[in-house]
Amino acid sequence: MKLARQWAVESCRSLGREDLVEAAELGISELVGNALLHARGPIRIRMRGTREHPRIEVLDGSDQPPTPPVRVAPDSEHLTTVGRGLGLVARAATSWGAEIERQGKVVWFVPAATIADEPILEGVIFDADPLTNGEGPIEDGLPVVLRDLPVDLYADSYVHHQELRRELRLLALAHGDAYPIASSISRVFRSFDDQLRLSRGTSSLDAALEGEAVSASIDAALVVPPTLPHTASRMIDMLELADTFCRSERLLSLATSPEQRAFRRWYLGEFVRQGDGEPPIPWKEELLTLDGEERGE
Image (cartoon, rainbow, N blue to C red; front, side, top):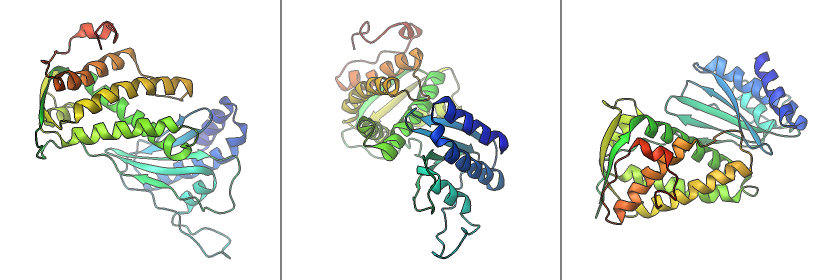
């Protein structure tokens, strides 16, 4: 617990945010304490968000949602034991919440410059997005084949995409006025993911994400909604915009590697190209050394 408090203090000071130290120390003490008492390991702490709006997160191995703060009578001097920790977090935050993931959860808060007298701030809890199901019927579906899809690159790109989507969603939720572009990017990300989940033949993609692929590369034959190629085209633009946004707003994480950029151009580009009636282009290692202009995108 002491180490977590020290980390929070040092992290805020390294950003030049001495004004957030008291709230950060209080909030992380409660979240780490709750995780130690009620969750499973491993327990990790990290800082996300931007330098202007840093967000502290505590990750654990339990997929059980945290217990919301319990309101008490106005004349009560103390919070009740149940939900007391999150009540203190709510007092120390400008926004807070939790996200249930497939292998645990993340509970987060944005430290406030002053600590409130009462825990009046409600948190937001998100459930994990399901993996693609690939079972639903699609009227006038469009066949798309991803030739020689590299399993490791796909899994790495998927994780980065979900983290980026989550980061932008939380920035839009907590500071939408400061980051209006985050809301626009998030909507396109959600549209693409929703349409992919409606596609047929995605079991091979699920296997790659779950580490069940039998080889280093696979062929994924999909039938996607006819609107997906257009959304994929918008995704290419939005991901470039997201990279610019991340750099300009000095996000505390989520830098996109050159390999991830090259892969996503090919991956999303295949939906666009085949939507225009062109044949599949297999993935090949040489694409890692080409930028978008050289490939004619």
